[in-house]
Image (cartoon, rainbow, N blue to C red; front, top):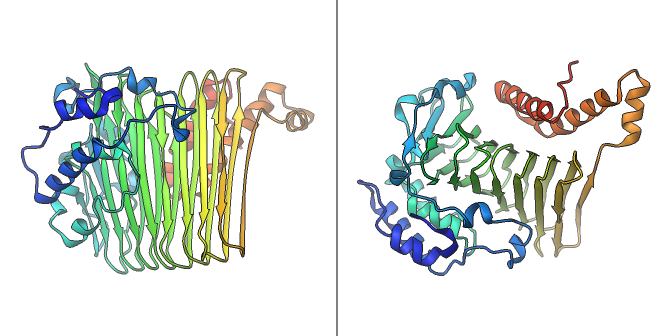
Length: 441
């Protein structure tokens, strides 16, 4: 049993002996390191600056159990969540456990290796980078993952390799009699001049309580390109705490799109770290929340070298009593000249009881840069509503059109057709639930 309000004592007592039947030397090392670091990693409280706006009750007032103790009920229709473009490039995990019978990984072409992470831990690349890229100081959630992970995703593209289809990483969370913890893990290594699209999908299949802690480490080497879409549609009683971190080398590109729909409490902390000149990266996001949901995004774009372009558009729609938190940090180091970085957080409030806390940040130590940031919080523009009314729409219909358009802007760059349509449908589902009907051309 895991009692997060007392990390040190509960983890040492309840999880010290937690281990799979088979583990190699690297997994054992990570497990031991994670257990030791938990002793010195304080569990977050609202007294900490980065957590001051985040209500942690969904975690601290729940006792989470290990997978084996949780009383899992896994009867589900897995095929319902497949995407057609990834018919032979799909990995399926149920409650953090790899499901070979539902996975299909034979259609990606030469030079692309995809599979269950433990099967590749003896390879040089995995040994070199796994758990070495994660840079979250004193973060107990990373150490929870390191202590408990047994399965995960391994993606390696050799020099010049091009994945012939998008890789769909499908994480499903089933019903259970007790709250449980799942710890998905992903390691992506893109060698020189390689190219891949990754769809990371988290789906809750019931309304039960669970906590999922995905940790994703990505290394984008010189000239490589990665498009990474993260879709979070967990149970509305779930806690989702994600740690995706990416390192980009010379002439490489990394474009990330995070869609947040589910979860009682979501805390996403994406980081992109520049390791050489001439890079291009994106950290876009869309958050649609309602009821008493809490969605917290703390992002970091770290520019350490000259000549880089980076972009972040984080859009949020809040209804009911929902609460959105955004803290986006742009760092430009002393020698990082010729940086062009843009960050914007736009928030649309559909109710009087919704709450938004936003804090875009710039820390610039170079003098030849073009950096900007901004944040807006408001309701629908009355002039825009009036304009549409003047074209024959009712006031309600005008509001429907504007809300729908606001939410769709962020996902327009997602390349996979079925995923793009899936997200359009999710936006429609949200707007319909909030009396905003689908707009047709």
